[in-house]
Image 1 (spheres, rainbow over the protein chains, first blue to last red):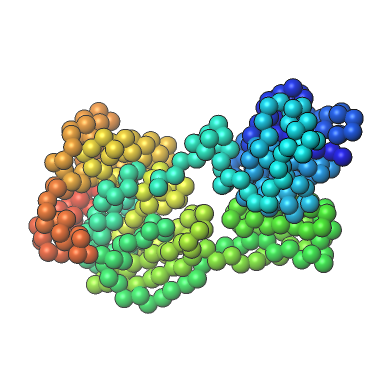
Image 2: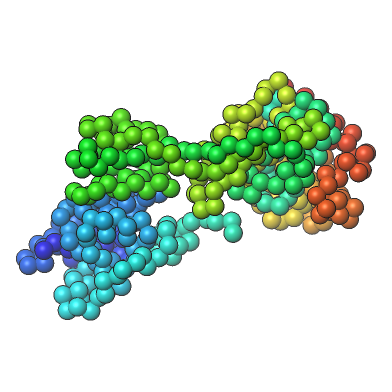
Length: 132
Length: 279
């Protein structure tokens, strides 16, 4: 089964990036063989709909589970429509996150964990300016 | 002539000044309130509304019977508004910019134009002033299509005043675009100056001639004046921080209606803007 982990760089020892839609890389791993493919995330620079574009990239790679830190409302809706399970709260390296997932330590979510555009501004929601 | 009134900082007095100019000119005036998220010019003008229109934007409507989920529409969409799975197509209406491109690229003709209500437009009159304003649907993220719709009512044979929304991003830019002159309203405080500088930068990039009106003159400090002098920006009018003006405003009355000296000042302001715009 293929899973996807959002990452800051292109290897299994890269730190997990807690943002799904705007992470620099998707590490797509075959759970049985641990062979992986590092896919650069073309959605990371999108003005809007990054989560949707990211979901489209990941769905096209035959991924069944996404392992990440947070997922916003659009990504959640798109991944769910594609039948892809979403597991959040991941941290450490990609390799460590996969081990935690295999041991059942990470939880599958049933609703988005953050609001829209949370991944802008270094993932602390500070890149989006609102005047209220 | 088309004059827009913007600011940068919110609450500086754009609407108050736009309305007072309109009321002072008195005839052949169109006041277009382009702050579609919070229109309030009509609260000072009290127009008789003669027409209301529901305004829609175009969103794609997918016929799942014809669709084979090839994904070409999703690939085409620059706004990521379409997501295709082997079983269904999701349209994210709030992201759609209504370009219609998905309809063109679909090889099966499975996409048609659907309507998405974005807001309401109202048109009315008050004492020779024609007013047009829009109210964006609550939760609707894009103001610009509704602002564009309001501006379609521009009658170039009249003096057109566009009351812009606060800020310096898309809604303000859409409003001031193609105006002959922009009046920036500010207050002489650090917040006022900071946001004024941002608005000035936008107008310089757009090559729109500008001038400043200082509202609540007397409070704060002198830095706005120093800035305008340094940048050679004309200060067209100062409105003092006066209780009577604030009182009338708080009762929904344009102050030049009850303080007639100001009618001449606003007329003079408008004529000076005409001269500067023609330079």
